[in-house]
Amino acid sequence: MDISLMGFESPLLRNLHHILEATEDSTTGNKSTNSGPTRAYVRDARAMAATPADVKEYPNSYVFVVDMPGLKSGDIKVQVEEDNVLVISGERKREHDEEEKEGVKYVRMERRIGKLMRKFSLPENANTDKISAICQDGVLTVTVEKLPPPEPKKPKTIQVQVA
Image (cartoon, rainbow, N blue to C red; front, top):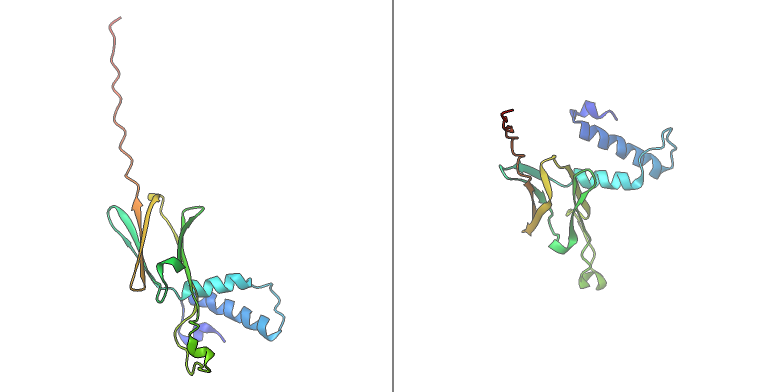
């Protein structure tokens, strides 16, 4: 199905549609002519598409606000990878209540489980040594301080000596 016919023109949606089609081909056993993305790539792409985030720039910092519902602060990982990439990830697993052991089963399961992840390229003036993260009520706030602007070079005065 052509996704543009449905009125979705976003490149992100187009790429996800392509990834999902490749995944469907591999699950049905139909061989595709291209090698397709790896399973880990598909999992990460789905996790990133399903994790909403806001990014704000303040005079002295960048603030990333990410919805991480149902996760405790110990289940969330905030890392800086090479090339100044901020990675925020976590995984929500299905609750294993004692009720399930007693024969209770889900009739409907609408709450999302699985991996949550976002990657952000940090600007050059981000100070990766000064990052803080706070998780409150399922919302993670990561603050990345900015490096101070470089001081302008002052003209160098050279004393002229009498010969």
